[in-house]
Amino acid sequence: MGKKFDGYLLITDMDGTLLNDKGKVSKANKEAISYFMEEGGLFTVATGRMTPSAKNIIYPLKINFPAILYNGCKIYDYANDKILYESFLEEERKGVIEILKKEEPYLGIEIYSHETIYIYKPCKYSYRFSRQGYDVIRQIKPEVWERKWTKVLLIGEEEEMNHLESIFHEKYDKELVIRSGARYLEIVPQYSTKGAALNYLTHLYGIDPTKVIAVGDNMNDIELLENAAYGFCVANGAKRLLDGAKHLAPSNNEDAISYVIQWMELNLL
Image (cartoon, rainbow, N blue to C red):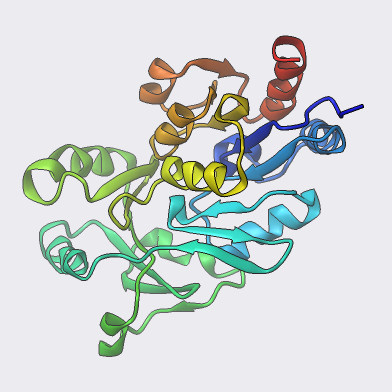
């Protein structure tokens, strides 16, 4: 006799969705995730975080499916310590940060390359790494431009980023950035999204697309939710995502993942 959640894949964003405002996975979420996997379900995360940063959350949960990192630029199998997929920023896209540095002086600009963060232009948020143990380099040498970049993170106040996002289509490249948070815009490789990575994984592992459930909170989750059979936006999500979501869940401070698993049990089984 098969287990209750056999064949189902549940994938969730991390910050603002799986994690509460204290950056923790609630007890109710932990217990629900464990129950879901024990009953045959596949569980994983799709996040903008780097490999080591996501690991700190993922390992205690003992997820049983590869994780999507860097907003779709990398797929990593933590169980086997193996990269399944990785894309890099196109060379012609690198130059935009020089223009941004001159024309948008308020911006913080960070380059992510080979699990290292290079502070190209500092801002007050650049010092958030000081207690987190990440490999951060604040002196940019010319050879950094020869390395492969995973993404570039642009940082500013919410109002500033709203303005930058609105003019990006006119001044730069309309396909260049995704909004990953109130203060964040990310320059990523073309066609690299959480949704595209999800499609890659479902094809690779032969997952039934009608049994995929996704949960998110921001615009970098939009394709993830659209490509899932059941896409949930948490109550604290960005208004644009909430307005277009197929399904709604409680906020990240109200055990959203536990709610989704209970919903699955009541509505899908």
